[in-house]
Image (cartoon, rainbow, N blue to C red; front, top):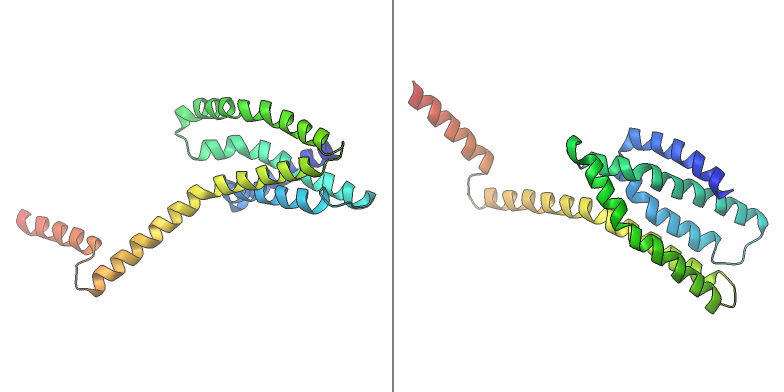
Length: 177
């Protein structure tokens, strides 16, 4: 069921990412998968909610795998996209080897229940979203602070940088005449 959802998620969320932006969809995948895990895997639910949870988690996790190369390509020069994606996959090798071992140990310690495994995977998913969203958030914050700083300089009587540039261009044109 999760694999069927994965196929649908790869197609639908890939298409949706083309419309709204790869990083917006890719950044939402981690937190949404964590929420699905905490809502439909951690508590004891019936068969129908478990099936819905499996399909929803499959859709989200499938989209993560489909959007990973697209997100990498959007921030890479064309001639470096393959190299950067290869480096990213190499960096993901260790967590991919260690994660299942930790999860199985948590299942054993939890008397063969998936409670602590669900907590582990949910936290990892949400932290993935935090890391993926941190760079755009920091970029937005820096732009916001820069625009506020420019507004403050203008209020204090300083000349904004774009006005200084236009004055330089005007002075150069006057000198050329």
